[in-house]
Length: 81
Image (tube, rainbow, N blue to C red; front, side, top):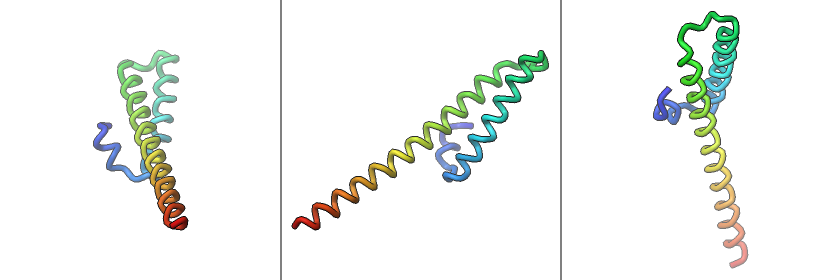
């Protein structure tokens, strides 16, 4: 999943994609341990996808928190005047 694709997802879709990717990683690791995984590069790809999803989710939560603080500060400043 490319970063641009991750940015287009909604918050609910991000959570769903994260769960799906974690389940896929678990299955890949299980197949690796049992000797059934032929292409081990898939593990790294899925790990990077998980990291991209988590990064976007964190960026959105920080942006929301920053916006909430800025809104609170502007309301408080307006009340003092």
